[in-house]
Image 1 (cartoon, rainbow, N blue to C red):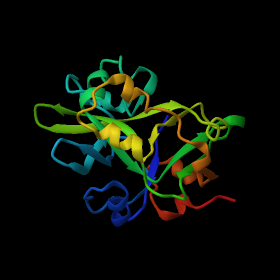
Image 2 (cartoon, rainbow, N blue to C red):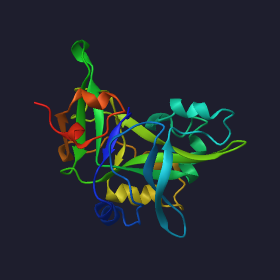
Image 3 (tube, one colour):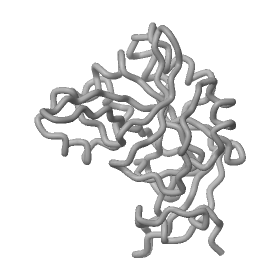
Amino acid sequence: MCGRYTLVNSREALEKAFGAAFPEGNESYNVAPSQKVLAVASSTEQTKAGWLQWGLIPSWADDKKIGHKMINARAESVDTKPAFRHLLERRRCLVIADGFYEWDREGGTKQPYRITVDNEEPFAFAGLWDRWEGKEETITSCTIITTEANDLMQNIHHRMPVILDEEARKTWLDPHETDKQVLKSLLQPFDASRMAIYPVSTEVNSPKHNHAALIERKG
């Protein structure tokens, strides 16, 4: 799964990597569900970056609290689950990050690790978004898609977030691409040789902690 991640690259680095204008104030060492997350979506006019709430609230939901249960969507069933299948065709996004956390729970302990890509360059999770309208508010929210773990991740967890390379990102954001099989074919484990992993402080276990020391190597 994916339940916590980082985004500490500069706005200039993000704009260079994704070819879109980014808002200020994106830095976070401990992004958590229910928070606003930086994402990129595409339309026929332009590619846009903006804020989405992490935890998908389907447009048809009676209660917005369902979002707490939908921070992730499984790649294997994203085209069949009622909350996701229509979004796969028309409401895809990139959730922007430069690292994510996972916990090794063996031996009765919970040791957190930070996982990065290409020497801590910014990257993109495959995501889906939707807009929910309540009586007094409108919430635009998202979920991060997960898949089977690659060789690097298997030692600590059997799932990992889908990370899209540059070519896959273009297809994922293409508003004219609606073939579900083509889109599902992108949802594969990322190349383990391009990733690195290292232990970090258990302070990251609480979303109340958000400071630079969280991403320092422990030990």
